[in-house]
Length: 232
Ligand code: MN
Image (cartoon, rainbow, N blue to C red):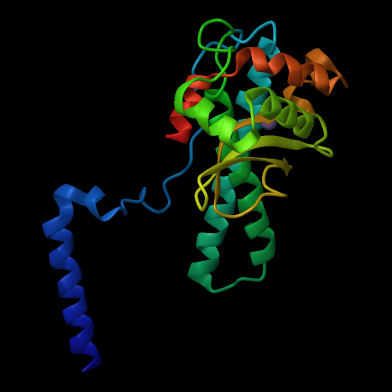
């Protein structure tokens, strides 16, 4: 009986898979095949394009070394978790789960970070418009109030971390949160649509200990079109 039911279930799945194959997106589940490694996305501009606000040396190290390390770390963690599933040995589950959260947080946040910046005057800087501005006004009162809160959150991150603008699905509001490291202090049901990296590796070569100068300069290179696209 069990065998017959399993057979019927598999036959049904197979039939659905064949029938639905041309419209896989219609069922909303088309994952990248298991075991496919994560890769470092290319910068959407030259390393020196954000000068004078972020220098080329910082960009090259930040993207080529730091972000790459998160990609490598995430792949390693996911490989180890796959091995644990195969062997049934979960002795290091806490370690690899933490590694997956840390490096995964780093990979996704940096992938967003590069895109929400653009050269000043060529897509970077200015102020948001349209639906994004409306959402900011409704959530924070005004763009100026939003900018002050976001700046304060970024400057005040304890140690290494981020200030992040999130979209919260439940009430369709924008909220500002800090993240320590790449993943701590966040909430649930929220999606970051913009963020500034305030790890020292993001600014120390140019700004040394003056994080506030870096945060204030950063507004000159925010790509509001991309933030608006992220909100959509
Ligand atoms: Mn970083």
